Length: 402
Image 1 (cartoon, one colour):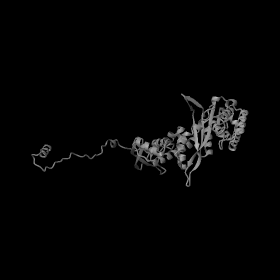
Image 2 (cartoon, helix red, strand yellow):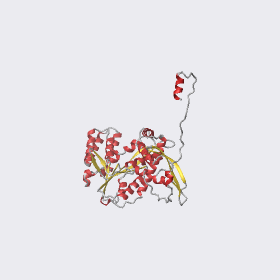
Image 3 (cartoon, one colour):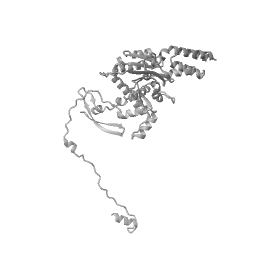
Image 4 (spheres, one colour):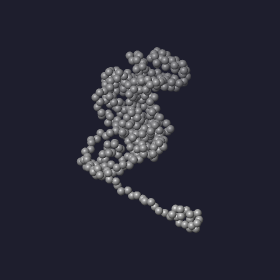
């Protein structure tokens, strides 16, 4: 043991100052065994739990509001700049924990009849030296189905994968599937808007080894495309087209599109209808209903990925927000870890380092029983000076005190 060093940490209850031993190991490295055992963040004045709570709060509100909430509800005083540093540190730790989890070998893999995988992306403004530019955040969502919870439905064993690099996100999904699932008896059901990077062939690579793979075109994007292209057409034609697509009736779809082309009054309307015809022709095989694919309708549980964008978009977009690349990556990692239930595990985790061999310290019991000398202050005597007659009121007070 080299000596003792003092450290002050901010916990949820306030600032705590303590002393711990500094130990020199056999390889001439200096460590604090207590810091290593408690998994304290090096060179940080905040406990791991405090960092986790601040990062979680920052993922739901802006940094100034987070700092205000911490200052009002805890004995601590923190600035919004410090909140930014803490959530970035938490994001780095979440990413490190995800990489370590990928390396864990799970012997007993899960076997489920159905797996549902959806993918999509959205834009976020990124800060640059000259101006802001838009970057895509890619998301993939893996679930095992849905369950009824009162009047609402919730996903089963949902796991979300998010990142700025599309191929890296797909690789994360591939690693997670290989690590946790045995797909030999599983039907993989996937869905996307079939846009660039989310074509059915991209999902075919993830479904290798599965019993069966069925890909569906996302209904939200399909309905939006139809309403956008036929915005100048009568509502009855839109309803007829929706009905034809829903029933997978190509004859009815072509009749409706021909009618729309006949009624088109402008060149731009005619071009929009032709683009819609090409869109439906290109994706027709992926509009095939579940019952015509030997699947029960209730087993197709797709559409949750698009609605679950809001957990990210409500925090990352709107109000003219733009992000640095490091801050954006950290916030994405924090939100993703929170959704997957891994945020607390990432911040409060026992270290996997080797145990420290320290010789026991011999201390006599009298050392703890010994009472240290404490300086005491005795009674002080005072007097009141009298500048008046002793028979006066002040004189009587002086005589009473004396």
